[in-house]
Image 1 (cartoon, helix red, strand yellow):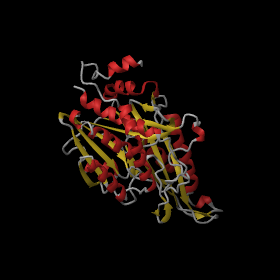
Image 2 (tube, helix red, strand yellow):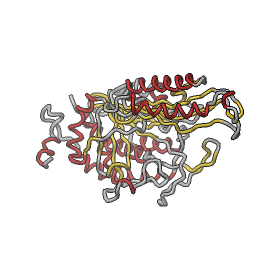
Image 3 (tube, helix red, strand yellow):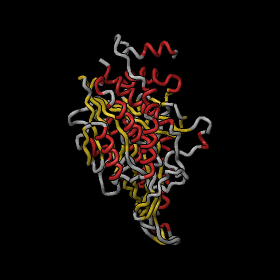
Image 4 (cartoon, one colour):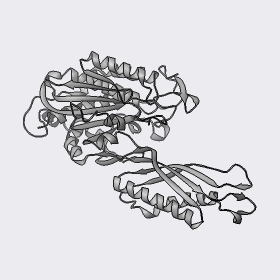
Amino acid sequence: MTAGIRGMAALLVFGCGLAEAAPDWSAAASDIEARVIAHRRHLHQYPELSNREFETAKYLAQHLRALGLAVETGIAHTGVVAVLEGDKPGKTVALRADMDGLPVTEQTGLPFASTVKTTYDGREVGVMHACGHDGHMAILLGVAELLAARRAELPGTVKFIFQPAEESPPVGEDGGAKLMVEQGVLSTAPKPDAIFGLHLLSMYESGQVGWRSGGIMASADDLRIVVHGKQTHGAAPWLGIDPVVVAAQIVLGLQTIASRQMASTEAPVIVTIGKVDGGVRDNIIPDRVEMKGTLRALNEPMRRDLHARVKRTAEKIAESAGARAEVFIAERHAYPVTYNDPALMRRMLPSLQDEFGERLIEAQPILGAEDFSFFQREIPGLYLFVGIRPSDVPAEDFPANHSPKFTMDEAALAVGVRTLSRLAWDYLAAP
């Protein structure tokens, strides 16, 4: 887009007539970039696991209160919500960042690397922001600073949601976006009309912003299958029912669901078995085998169909051998599809195109999952990708999210600030 066209676009609000000049978000983000980077480095150095983000919450609340925002803490255990009311009346928009780190021992060698250790699943582990949540929080603090400075011109209200336990709460606990929704973060005043979020991703270059209408991240449902056979001597298998063989047949049969039963041209689905456990001795056929895995889909109808096919396949294969299979889906972990509302995407796409030009790309969906999807089930929402990989580094040579060597080009933080600031402002400014 030429400079002249961009200048005109800054004076228009969705083509509905002449308005006050919109803020220059690129310049504004540059002005606070050093502070945003400092936030990120502090939060990176002191990560905390899901539902244990106590010091993180204190840090966030302190800075949000210093900006003059109304702050509430202790939501969904450690979540922080801050409200900025503009001096002009209007709608309410929510912006979200996740807070938790991962049980990963950092290997980056950065001067602000995490040396935190804690206990996870009964073992001592390192703790690291290996998925960019430190950047997400820093970005949202930056957006809060920019919008608070423009309170007099802000046409509406912004609700800043800092969410714990995106990586899923500990076993036996609740948490995350689902619990925040249950506790009223979207239904209590000020009630948001829409919500925006983003994720820093290593697969995209720094400066790139990825958008997609519809499903952008997959649903995720845990899967557990218990095969019941009949124990016998390994030298006389005909005297029993071998659940190991049946389990092997089920694993192979499940793979035909994605490859032969689902409409692969519509959207991909994934059935992965990641753990198989059965037996205690080499010459004893056991009486049971337990398998655990994950199911992924990119739209809700296919998700429901996948669940039904997995259950039927496992049960019928077991039945054919005289065994019995119990299928448990979403016992503990169940995230819906992260689904970008098409109407909201059409509405906001011109703002993103004006802000980023050729650096805005239509993203391919990914089969990772995000509990931002629980917010999107309640109100229209958009979830975007922001690249963090230096342009001179090939994707295959750059540490992926969840790697102990995960890092980022910190110039991407200003891109994230521009993204959420522009979306929030233009959404509120639109008639």
